[in-house]
Image 1: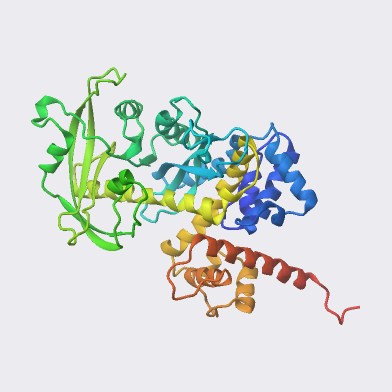
Image 2 (image 1 turned 180 degrees about the horizontal axis):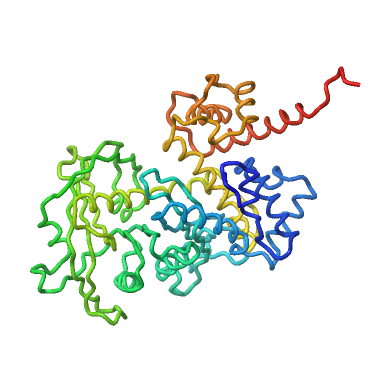
Length: 463
C-alpha cells in the first residue's frame, strides 16, 4: 500500500492495487492515473499517444469497469490512513457537472428535466476524509456517488446524505471514529434520529427553525438558542464571497469581503418535535445544538450565524469550540470540487455517455485529492523541508530550470511557489489558483522526465 500519495507513482500504485480481478484492467488503471496526474488539466488526446488513447476510451466504456471498482483500492488506503489517526472528519457535499445544452451525451439528465434547452448534467456526491487535529489534512476519498436527474423525482437526492454517511462509515470501518460534516441541505429529522440510534457522529448545519417539545419553555429552536448567553469566543477568518446569481442564493449566501470575525458560541440540548410529514416512529428527538454568531459585525456587513446539530458533547466551552472547528473544516470539500473542476478541467471532457464520464470522474477523484493534499501541506506545514512533498529529482529540476531561485534548504512553501511559477504565477499576486498549479505540476513532471533520461545517458567519454 502506498505511503506517500503526493508522489504520482505511489498514488497510481495505491489506486490500482488489486482494483480488478483482471490484472490487465488494474495495469491500465495504473497507467491512466500516472499519465493524468502529471497534467490533470490536459485533454485525453494530449495525455496519451494514439494507441494509449484508444485503450483509455475502451477502459472508460468497459461494462466491467465501474466507479466503485476504480475507487476500491484508494478507499482501502484511505481507511488505513484514517485508522492511524483515531478520530477523523468526513466532509460531505454534492456538486453538478454541466455540459452544453445541445449535447447528445447518453444517459445524462437536465438541470431542468422538462426543458430540452437546459444544460446536460450529472451530479456527484463526494465524501472526503480529513484529519481532525486542526490541520484539515486530506486523508482520501471515503465514498463517492453519481446520478442524473430524470423527469420524475426518485428520492435519490433527498436520501443521499444519510446513505453516504453510512457508506463512508462502513468503508472506513469508522462508526466510532468518523465525525461527519454537512451543510444545511442535510438537515433531516429522520436522519438525525436514525444516525443517533446507530451511534454515528456528525455536525450538520441547521436549515429549518424546528418546533420544540413544549416542556422546554420555547416553541421554536431559534428562540431558545437566541436566549442563551455566550460561553466562548473564537476569532476566525471569513473568506471573500462573490455575489450569487439568483435571489434565493443571494439571501442564503450574501456577498462579503474577506475579514476577521469574532464569533460567539453557546450550546443547548433540545428536544425536537417530529415534523408532521415525518415517517419517524419517535415523536421527539433529543439532540445537541451549538449556536455560532457574530455579535458585532462591521457596519453594512451581514452577520455570520450558524446553528449546528451535533452528536458530540457540548458540556464545556472547549467541547463547544471543538464542534465549531469541526464544522469550519467543511469548506475543504469546496476546494476539492474546485480541484476537480478547474485543476482537472472535468467539465471540458468529451466522453459521450454517463458510464464513461463517471468512470473518468472516479479516476480523477484520487488525482484531485492529491492536488488538494499538496496545497494543504503548504498551509499545514509551510516551514517543513520541501523533501516531504517532492523528490530529489524534482527539487534538482526546480533549482536548475525553475523561474524562482530556491534557497539551499527549501521549505514546502518555497517549493509550492516555485511550482506555481512554472505555471505562470507571480510571487506577489496572492495564492496560486488550481489551474496555475496544475500547469506548474505538468511542466515540472515533463522537466523531470527529461532530467532523469539525461542522467541515464552514458557520458560521451565512455567507450
